[in-house]
Length: 164
Ligand code: GDP
Ligand code: MG
Image (tube, rainbow, N blue to C red; front, top):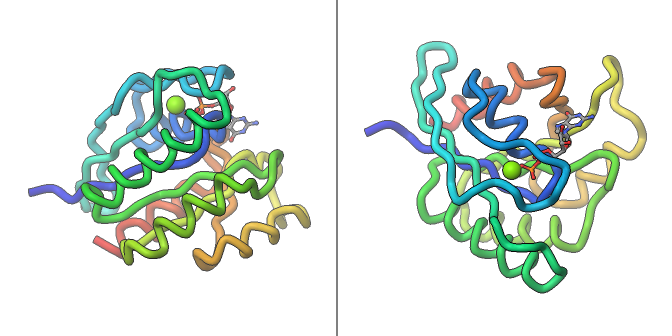
């Protein structure tokens, strides 16, 4: 059957925006309020002739700090259990957070291929200095992307299918 790619990351980093961009349809709800993705959303993707199912993860619960962390652990667990490749999304403007570090270490232990994205890199050209902080997550070279503009999403897809 078709391989599965899961998108994980903290609320508001732009998972649903990226999902919609990659699927080419607005299947997932984008909102400034953290945690508005309803359940799990599935979409079909194709890149260079490779087909896969993309999953947008997210929660409906209000994101108090405790709920947020437990939700992110569940989300990461789900991705590790069901995905062939995991896309971890982070936010350039916010920087590396403790929750990012926790999820990154869970993903790292799973041994699944992880593609680390730094989203909201909206300006073209070299990424700003803050970008390099994301190397500290230990998931290899981060990829600078802008889900709104689509910058970097082709390189991201190349990397994803390299693991399929
Ligand atoms: P999610 O909670 O991780 O699914 O995040 P959403 O996709 O709902 O996006 C949260 C907010 O970030 C929305 O206001 C998006 O428009 C905004 N956003 C997402 N991607 C980008 C991006 O690449 N650049 C900028 N500037 N904003 C973005
Ligand atoms: Mg969402």
